[in-house]
Length: 146
Figure 1 (cartoon, rainbow, N blue to C red):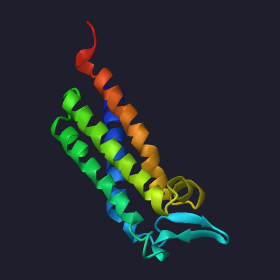
Figure 2: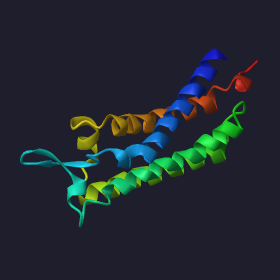
Figure 3: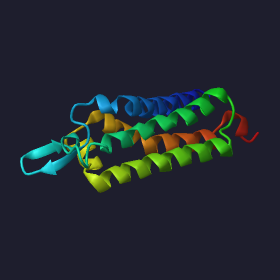
């Protein structure tokens, strides 16, 4: 039971971190970066084409929906609808990051090379939260044989 509670807490933490990144990424003065001849340069400097890349990170706020669903059903097994909502939000956020990379932003470069720790933690939290949700689905204490 303790392990399940710990995993559930970690899942909430991952979702919370991703929501926080969605709200606070635009406050970062550099924002998304791209490689330049003199090192990284900010996509915000390209007002005509790269200035909107930071808006793509706002999609991380959509993780508030799975957060709210899990909050309402804290002691129950994650339902198929909850997992589908999580996967849908995950696909939307991944798609938004891919769209940002089509313009100016180099997402992996910004997160791990520049580094932007907030974005790096959020990108790591995406697959980790998915794995934690699957654990919650399979290992709920009420589902043990016996």
